[in-house]
Length: 355
Image 1 (cartoon, rainbow, N blue to C red):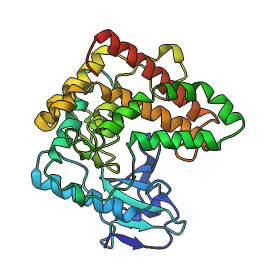
Image 2 (cartoon, rainbow, N blue to C red; image 1 turned 90 degrees about the vertical axis):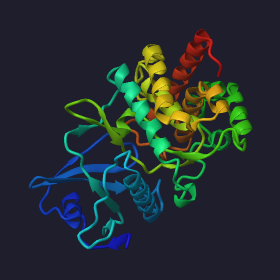
Image 3 (cartoon, helix red, strand yellow; image 1 turned 60 degrees about the vertical axis):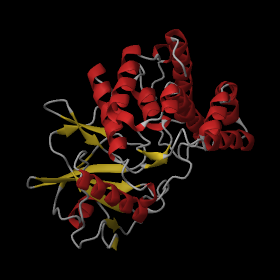
Image 4 (cartoon, rainbow, N blue to C red; image 1 turned 30 degrees about the horizontal axis):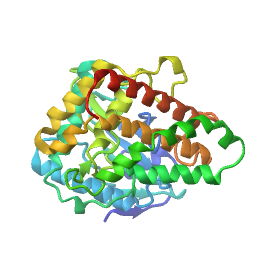
């Protein structure tokens, strides 16, 4: 049984009791933009509770089924650890409360933490190597085992069309405030052309990718500062070579995060960039084709471009996807990513590497 419908789950403490923790101490956990996540503790036992955002993941049963399949595969393989799923008190995997919220739980790994930023070059390398090993560990899994929960998630052509549709269907101040970002994105349409050229090319095969690779989706040991495992596995699905590496370059090789409005400080950190690429290639081993390796430096450009598209599209559509704390945050996130993209282009041009 995957889903269990119960009543009276109107607080996080009551949700915790549904997973076996009575009168638990509960506190928010993490900085995620999609789900609401909490740490629940009671008498030395702790777990992570997560209220699933069903506007983004409309099929929670498929979500937990995918996690269980990945967990079982990795358990059998024995090379990569991820947090164990925690069943409900009645043996299910999901709780569905009176308020239509859907909840799941996983074990909490003690003495672990997720950094908000990349602390040093070593952390960048080890994080990238961890994600590379993770993809390599999934190579023996039949990609048909997993249900695609977010269709076209890293399909650049699809994201570009979403962007153009949003531009066409938006009027007023949101469109006017976005004109600079819109123009710059259209000037880089060649990245979409590259994506279309590799989409069905067997030299760029589909493989199971994490699709949300950033340092705060890695657990580190609080004492040793070493990597423990990747987390936030909801977006694991078939994808192209650039997704995971590109997202790490975008989020870890930058001087400030995507929420910063210190435009003059946005740049690419060369030593971090090199550590991420080296770490990922070391971790993934021989999984990449020669063609993928030849175009490895397209990864950061594609993912930064795609994230700019997604932020400005969400702004144009009224901030339906990403959480915001002030009215123009998604537009400012888009501008942040556009500046990062420009800096990355300059960095690669100076580096004189093949893209």
